[in-house]
Each structure stands twice: as C-alpha cells, then as structure tokens.
Length: 380
Image (tube, rainbow, N blue to C red; front, side):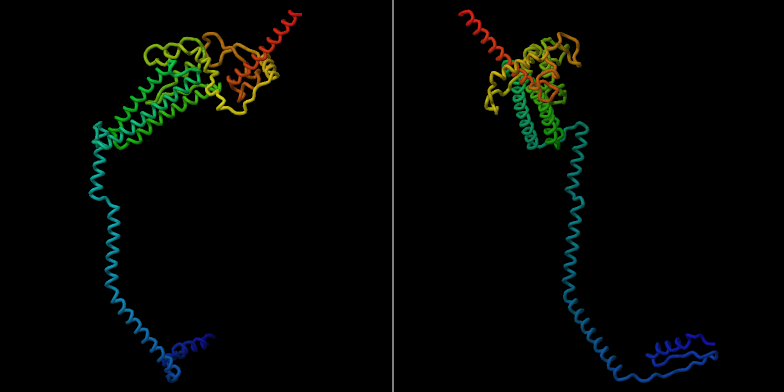
C-alpha cells in the first residue's frame, strides 16, 4: 500500500521539473521510468524571457561605462592614496624619538647624574641672572614683611620699633633670612632646573611663619592670648622666643645658657612692663577707625562702678605654669561683667580697661560731690 502522501509528492516533483521539459516519475516496484515531453513555451513566456535578456544587456552596458570612468580616475586616486600614506607616516614619525630628541634626553640624563654625584652641571649666564633676580626679589619681600611685622609686634605691646630691642632682633632675623635665601640660591644654581620651585618653597616657608606670628600679635591686641605656635622651619625667621618672653607678663628674669639664646636674653629686660602694656595695648584708637561712637552718661559711670565693685579679685596660677614667682592677680571670668569677654572664655583687656576707666570717673564724681558738701557745711 502506497504512503498517503505519495500522490502529493509525485505532483510536487512534476511541477518542479516542469521548466526543464522532461522529468522522471518513479514507478512502482518494477522501477519503470516514464519520460514526459512538456508543451512548448507560450508567446508570453518567450516575450518575458526576451525582456529579461534586454535588461541584462543594459546592465552590462552600465557596468562597462562605470569601468571606463574608474579607469580615468584611478591614477589620481592612487596618487592621493600615496599622499595620505606619506602624511600618516610623517605623523607617526613625530611620535617617535628623533635624533635631536635623543640628544636632549641623553644630555638631561647626564646632567642629572652629575648632580647626584655632587658635580655642578653647566648653567648659562642668562639662567644664572634669572635665578639671581628671583632670589633678589624674594629677599626684598622678606625684608618688607619683617619690617611690617616688627611694627605690628611693637605696637601690640605699646612700644615702637626704634625704642625697644625689637629692632635689634628684627635686624638679626633679616640677616638669617638673607643667609638662608642665598644658600637656597646656591643650591638652585646647582640644580638649574628647579629655580622657580626652590624660590617658591623658601618664600612660602617664611611667609607662613610670619603669618602665624602676626596672628599671635592680633590675639594679644584683642586680649585673646593662646599657646604660641613654634616657628622652626629652616630659612624662616624664628620669632617664638620674642613672643614667649613677652607673653609671660611677669617681671622674672629669664636667661639661657650657651649659644643661640639671644632673643630670650634681649627681651627678658622688657618682659615685665612691656608684656603688661601689651596685654591691653591699643593699636588703633583714632576715631578714623571707629564707628557708633557714643559718650557714656553719669548713670552709666555709676553702673560701671557698681559692676567693678561686684567683681571679685583673686590670686591664681595657670595650670600650665610652674610654681615660680608670685601668683597672678585678676578677675575670674565666670564672676565678671559680661562686657569684658567676647567668647565666654578669654578676657578682653581693652573692654576691661574701659570698664575700669568708667568706674574711675564715677568715683571722681563722688569725690567732687563730697568735696562740695564739705565746703557747703564748712561755710554754713
């Protein structure tokens, strides 16, 4: 029995081979093959095939035309391609090390090796002049900053630069700073590639130390004393001995043994009175720098006197001090008028002095009234 899809498969094979005009159809078990001759093509089919041949001829003509056009422009394209390759090669060669670049690199390596061995590499006169100019400007800046600092230091303690040992100390600091800068200049000439860096480091160290010292001056002006910061960077002025002695505010003499204690020896003579003045120093008391200026009335004088009378005065020592010399005498902030403190921790000596001055005026008014009463009683 034949497969149920056999008839459909036979029909498909017949349709598939119809275009060739001859197709086989397998027989049954006997293996008989039947050859069938197809019908001749119709006029429509022949017309379609002829039209297809015409289209193929047109396509062939177009391809020939394109080939002829390419044959004309190909030499120019070939030349352009060669130029592009040449340009790309030139760009790539720039990324590689040229003979001149090789020479520069080898020279730099030789100079670096000579510097590491302690041998001075060559330096041009122009570069040497530039280094000298840089450090000359740095030395002038150092001198200017020191003079300004000296004025602030003296004024913060009620002194002037010329009538105190501050001038001598500042001159010494100028000499030390100049020596340090000249040493840095010599080192820079040995390492000729780092002139600007060396100058920046030297100036930066000096200005940083000077800024910190100026901050201590401003703290003294406002009565907000603090633990002093050390100034020990190489090549920068060491002002700490000056401030440490003046800050103590005691009349005790302090001397140092051995060398290097010049600042302590110089300023120990003015430690007592200068520090006392400095604690309540007035830098700018002119009306030009003040605003909202209002005089106190008699009632305010009397109120100031009462606040001063109510403020207890005690003897004390600071916890960080050694038990040497007499103790301090003064108020305790928690038991003092609020006017004498800005932050609730430190005493503003300027306002404290102003409060005492107002209280003194109230006492003076009371004395005048008593004197007048006695005179009236005596005359009556």
